[in-house]
Length: 237
Image (cartoon, rainbow, N blue to C red; front, side):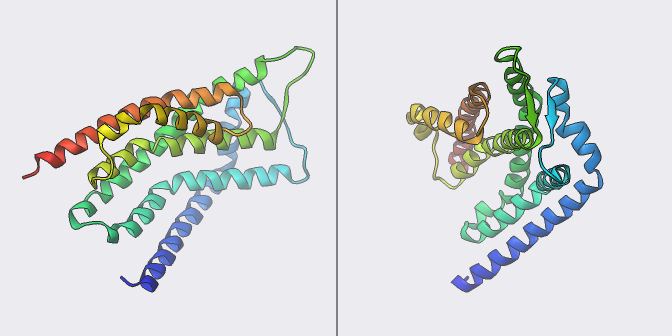
């Protein structure tokens, strides 16, 4: 493919990706009341947090924002498919056969990260936020700040849970090896701590550590995944 053909391919992949996001948004908007009341606000209710809207039309924008994020999560398989389909022409024929498996694996890892963040990270971090400090000060959260915390934690966890998939793909094409990952394990832990701090902006150190610990475990799992991938390559005739 020429440079212009690559640009044309990129344009169509972006269009298909945005179309999937649009469809996901309309599906989410059809259930937006349920999504906001039973999903977005549930962690706040569990932690007995009082939320306040401090802006005109704030709730309208809240509903729109959360519908867009929910639509994005729903369309994640399509986003991954378009991304890997754009990359596939640069791969060898024997490497392209892994694309569908990678799309499924990527979607599974992202969903796993979101679920982990929703049921473990958010409750723990919100309980810490409400329990810390003096009883003389009432903790009332602005809905915009609450939404920012929820989205950063959910999306951040979904992204970092892609580490085993990335390890699998890079090992399959021969870029990454288990030996390399073991050698630079200490460097990776430092990077993980920095990444956890970046992906949880505005949240407390507890949330950062809650994200960092499974990231370290994911790194160890990625070494195992890379090792298995390398063995399969070596066993090929």
